[in-house]
Length: 380
Image 1: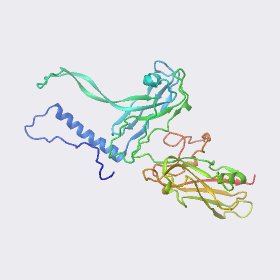
Image 2: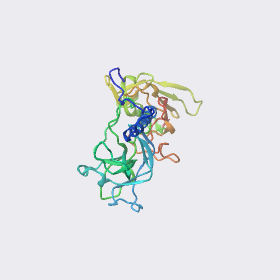
Image 3: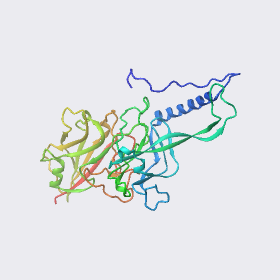
Image 4: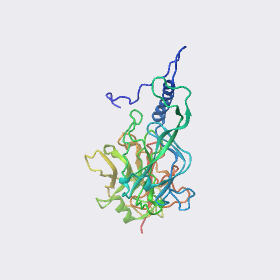
């Protein structure tokens, strides 16, 4: 926040009680508003916003107990908790079936890709007869006694905007909907399939969404022939090299010598475990670029690989800064960052990250650290 920017919060005023004071409904409403605004301010500034738990979008089975009216192209939102960018808690207490066509604005019903989200809302409940009329104006003799905090499901055919604020505390967010899923190839007359629903657009709960590594162009732990490894490293081909892809923009000026390191651990039939470092340099992004979503790093020396070698690739993610000058969250958890352009490989045990949202990426939520991966080399 610069010196010219203000803190986008209305002045907080609390009721000051004194003997003989006359209090009305407005005073008690303001008293509630004071404490609610304090709680929301504390929530979004100290903890952040996003999906806390649950709120997964799943295809609605044809034999569901409570199908929507059409019974086709419908999803079920599971129970869960979220906090919106204003600090309101969004509680979905039971699963909710959503007919996509019915929920879409009429102008979007020709779209093949839709987004589903949830938004905090309130509604008055429990009509109550008033005892005294309002002496200052026309009043209704029946008023709602309570305000129920609820939610509304939103569906759109227009790609939602991304919250690009680096600081989500000092300024309020304009976009109140928490988007939960992107659904592609929608045919409103047919049930959805699981592979049509992409959950990775969800914002995890926190003050900011860390930039992570989403793909590499080699298979972690795989065995390559010597020629395949040379092609991968760009040893003899200027268009080759190791590629690393990020979830968001990173500052190109932080991709400095030493950030990427290639170490070769010698194998073979004789004595092994001698190591040497393979020289290399960044081929992309091009000079002069301010930001990049991917880099390519290729070998620039003439050392050769031999049968049984292991090539260890390290990316010092703590030195790679994103658009907000925060370090990339780079830990290669489980060695499962996917290969660029390949279908995610199924794995026994932990098929998805602890968040339940795949595909895997780097990161533990702490930020920084070192991304490590390796592959093996065989003569043929």
